[in-house]
Image (tube, rainbow, N blue to C red; front, side):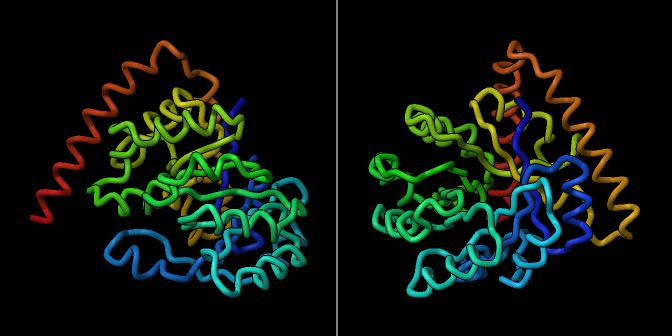
Length: 272
């Protein structure tokens, strides 16, 4: 089975292009609380989406699932979740959770009315994962490499793939029979670590989900160019997936480890 891929946009025209190109999920991102402080100085996207975007996209999408990331659990979470569900979300993602109680309250609030996704991206979340996995109502877990590597004080997010952290986490999730994914992928041939290497590692680790990063398609282009680029990159991605051979898993893992080490050392050297 090919990876289930998500694409972040609040533009209905771009969302329809992504859907027609075969993207499985369109992602509206409402998370703002604490994100600027956590990721200050990091080259990451800070979303400015709104609940109104959920309504707009839910009214036009016909095949792709509408995923909405809400804010970390807080005093206003129940109200926010109610608004998101009533606006047409198919699945809600909880980011930055740190305790079993936060996850339990989130699952209870959603109450199986839509799908649930837990975004594991803190050291505290990893520490309490065994207890979280005993809860009912978790439909999937995604490992957020960007914030998780910051939580561990690492230089480069893909170090989590080569130091055993992701492998340890997914082993626990797999034993509970819960689908999982991690991080994001760019278009083939792009990225500090080539997308092909990351995709192959998804398959080695049994991951079934991945975010299409902003490098996958430039949304600022005219729509005709967005359409052309999106269709081309999705076709290349699916063709590559069909050709993945398990015999390449171990050589790919070794080369991935070597390249990640080089990038991490270079980043660390710049900081010193």
